[in-house]
Length: 167
Length: 356
Image (tube, chains in turn green, brown):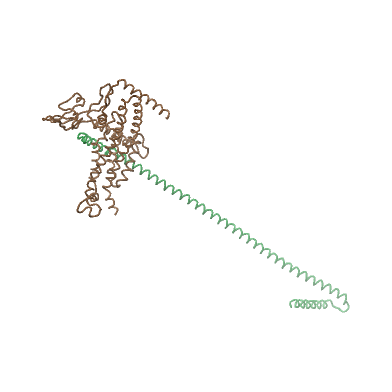
């Protein structure tokens, strides 16, 4: 059987111990441990969010670099196009210029040829007049009439030539 | 380490062989009353016996506080050694063996109202003081230091993991969150109280050695506290489960069979707590003491048998001491855990209703 004296003392001692420890002992310890636990949890959460931010930043960085690359490529391509354009235009211009020069040269040549031809013709006329004069010294009294005749005849023949060529 | 252990065993065996040889010289080894020796150690007493040297008992006298028919008496227990003191004496044999009694008018031994500070009471006081100093020392660390900047050191580093372990794994997992903080101080106090008393009980000499948690009066108070904690603040659901449980109606209407069993359960649960702790600790003490007694019992068998048995007894005694260290923790843990579970059951229904 439990001894009443011991029972009494045990009750008193245990209740006193319980009162003291429940007031100044365990709540202090548990609340502090809880506080530290919350702090650690919070810190871990912050670290995790920082990590996530970091990962996002890296992603953003990669995206920006990619964009810059694309931009670079685009600019390079545009530059190449512009260069090609300029070259092409220059070429066209040069060709036009050359064409123009060529045409001018041609007209000049044509003119020269024309004048040369007319000179040749007059000379040929003179020559043929001279030749004809020598041949027909007797028949042809007046130079002037003879020359007008010959001119007329040469012109006619030229006209015939041209009309023939035209046909 | 291995070498040291071997030396230790060698030295111990030589000592054990020497002891019976000396005992044999006296030849007349007195019969040993093992039973009274055992219960003398396990039980309570008015003075704190330490040892006997050269036939003289050395003990610490403790105050005797008694209210007898002649009023209050208060004196040191050493005065009882020489016989009756102020009409009070320690009974030998009979109903009140070992207790302070007085003679009434008709010459019968009667027990006065006795609140003496016995060995167990003194042990409880010492252990409680140690417990309070340990825990307050720990909580003082938290007051003096910033918990967010420093890891606990010293006392706090020892106490805190145990507090956290009991608080998180036992209390919070058994009691709904809304109530666990309210009961945590009691359960933690109970755990550390039992643990310190168990451990101090294993130490064989003063200030340990008082068989406090192996005494039914002490476990009775602890179980009573759990009983109060469970039933005083229990919710309606708990009482409904006892008097009108969810079982087929014929188990409760004409003859309230299940309510009857449930009602008894209220008392058997703390009763089981009380007996479990008491029996485990008392049995542990009894086994260790029995092993030690083997050394003295086998003296008569001659030096060789005595030496061998002493060695075996020593070995098993050491083994049991280690086991008792484990039991000291396990019993404190089991008491706390079951208390927490019982308290949790008394609050469970409410939680379930709130969820609905």
